[in-house]
Length: 558
Image 1 (cartoon, one colour):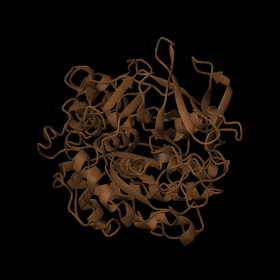
Image 2 (cartoon, helix red, strand yellow):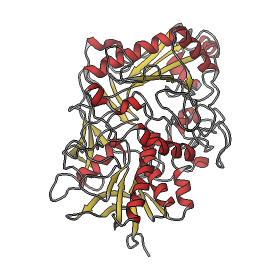
Image 3 (cartoon, helix red, strand yellow):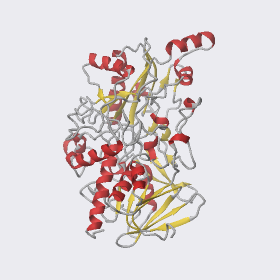
Image 4 (cartoon, helix red, strand yellow):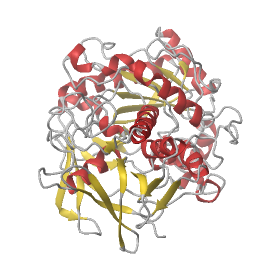
C-alpha cells in the first residue's frame, strides 16, 4: 500500500520542536501518524564537521532544500537618534554601510528536527507574568491559558529532551526539579559572574537541553562550545534525537522527508486532505482525521494563506489575523577583549543566564523584559580564523604574536528582549517571487517601533556595563537588530486566544473554525516573553495538543 492510499489518524506538517513533539505525543497515545518534512534527515555522525580541520569554516551544513525560501520587504531607514545601536567592528568599521536596515536572514533549517538542529540548546519555561501582557500592560494579547496549565507538559518535555538547570526561579515555579543537574560554569562565565556581582545582578545556571552526563542512551557534553554547528555526539536534545527517535520506535509514526506540502484541502465542515510534492515534483494527496501544522511563524501562515477556502482568503483566517502580529528576535551582542587569558573558546554557548530584567515591568519606564547571557559562541568568536579577521589587527610577525596573546580572551555578552506586535510587522505572500511549484513565497515585513528601540538601547547599554564590570578593557565588535533583520526566534502569526474574532486558534492550538486543524509552533504565541528561548514552550503546547487530540478521537469527537 502506498502512502497516498493509507489512512492516518493524523498528518503532521513540519518536524521542528512542535511537529516532532506532536508526532511523538500522538504515536505514544496509539494513533497512526504521517509526518511530512520538506527537508532531509541529518546524520549527526556524518553531516556535522566539528571533527574536521575545517570546522570553523563550516557553519551548520546545507542539504537539498535545507534552507527556507522567503523574501524580506524593504526595511526602515536608520537615523542618527539611534546611532549607538549601529553594528560595527574595530577592524572593518560599520557593518551596514547604507542608511537602511538590512534584511539579512531568517535563521531556519528545513530538515528532520527543524531549527532545533542548530539551536544553542536553551530550554526555557515562559515567565508567567509574560502571559498577561494585555490585561496588565495594555500591549500584545493575553494567553488563553495560565502558567500552571503548562506545568505538567513542561515537565514531560523536559524529561524527554533531558533538560539540566537550576531549580530556583521565582518567575518559573517548579513542582519538580529539572531531570538533570545544572552544568558547571566555564571560566569565562565565572569572569562575567564577578562583573555581575559588582553590579548587584544575578548569574544562575541556564536551563539547557544539553546533557551534563549520560542520559537516555545519549552521552554527556564534551563542552566544545559549538552547538550551533550541529551536535555530532547527540548530547544536545534536538528534536531528531529525542521526540522523533521515540516516535519512530513506536512504529506508528511514518516519517517522510523531502515532501513539501503545497495545499491543505477542506470541504464545508472539515480539513479533508493534504497535497504535497517530492523533490522530483511528483504530487501526492493524503488524508487523515486531523492535520497538525508546525512549519514555524513564517512558513505556517504562508501555507494557510495558500490554502484558500470558498468562504475565506486563507485557511483558518476567519479573523483576518493569519500572518499578522509578527514578532521577531530583538537582540544585541557586545564583544570585548579581556586582559587575561580566560579560554572563552571552551565551555557551553550559554551555560549561565541573568533573568533580573526578564519580567515585563523590570526595566524602568519600558514595557517588556530581556535577559543576558554569555554570547561568545553565538558571535562565532571561537576559532583562530575569526580572531584573525575580527579581533586581532595587523599582519605579519606582530599579528602572529598578538594572536597567541589574545586568542581565547574575547568576552561577549548578549541580550534578547521582548518583541511586541504591531500592524507594520507581518507575514504576507509575494506574488512576484514564486517557488519551484509556482506558489508565492512568504514575505517578511518588519519594523522596529520606538518601544522596541528604547528596550534595545537599554539592552546594549547593559551589555557594555556588564563587560566593563567583568574586566573588559576594549570593545571590539557590537551588532544587533537595529540595522539588521536576523531572527532565529519568530512568533505570533497565528495567535491563540479565547475570542475567535481576535485569534486564530484556541487554548488547545485548535482552529476556531476547523475542528480537525491544529497549529503547534511559535506562531500561536500571543506574546514573545522577555528573551526566553521558545522551544520548550512550543514542545509543551504540542504535547498538550496531541494528548487533547487523542482524547477527542477516543470520544469520537474528531
